[in-house]
Figure 1 (cartoon, rainbow, N blue to C red):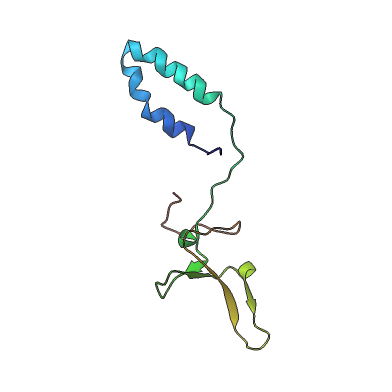
Figure 2 (figure 1 turned 60 degrees about the horizontal axis):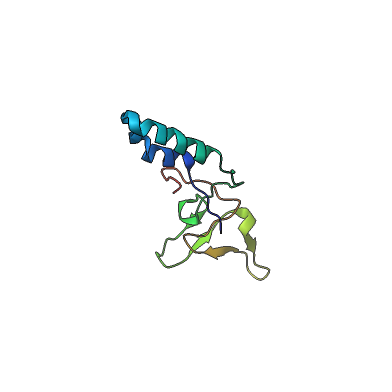
Length: 103
């Protein structure tokens, strides 16, 4: 199975090789190898716990999505029914809550 990495972050981990002349060639070679790898078609996601549409007021194992696309009105009562999700779930409609960062 393939996995996606942050190539720029990886390069920072071995950047110290460039301090010495002997390590400079090795670091340049490693740069070439990393840059030659194919780029995966991925997008960053917003996990429910960091989404402005999600709340977990009762601190239970689940929370509720308040995005209009994920809730509906009950036919029998005048209430909205929200989708129940776990904190690490995500969807295409997630929007970053202010003050949080994606992992």
